[in-house]
Image 1 (cartoon, helix red, strand yellow):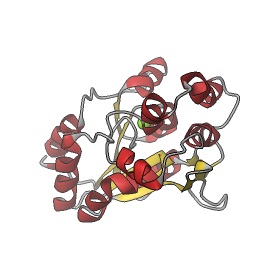
Image 2 (cartoon, rainbow, N blue to C red; image 1 turned 180 degrees about the vertical axis):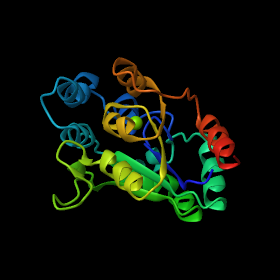
Image 3 (cartoon, helix red, strand yellow; image 1 turned 90 degrees about the vertical axis):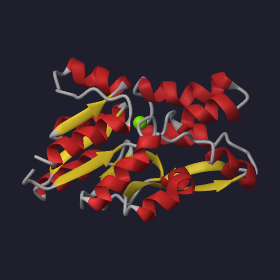
Length: 222
Ligand SMILES: [Mg+2]
């Protein structure tokens, strides 16, 4: 392919098998009903996405050691590593954009991020056993700021498109929808797939990163 290719992917539920906030609710938090309330409030449009994340994560009161061990159990799609390797070898930039936080992403895949030059764009966070995890959005003056999700994934996709890239986007959730509208090719599953179907946005089928890697190989070798 003559045009430069870029791969942009969501993390939770796309690179990881299960959203970190669902892992927290299912495994760490005792009162499941209270634990889920912030997420329901977000889905009902009552609160912002970033406040729902903090609402759930602030209920974590593990020791730092326990939290780190828990983060190490985040299951990663094994083909993600092959894809990252292919991209770095072929000079295809690989972005991970997450409306979660780089706190757990960095702890889980920091070696891979540096080994394959992956660019991670996400919210910061602080953690203490007493106050739990609190997300920190980028500055409002950041070109990638969004008041709802902190990080504006769509603005990153738009910037790369403006820079002349053929944009390939992979995601699974509501915060990926604006990006899906902009990207040249969309790999969607779960809620994102439903939203795209409703608005007639073309998507590609996608079980794991092997599907994405096969596609990138096929267009890259054209
Ligand atoms: Mg996701």
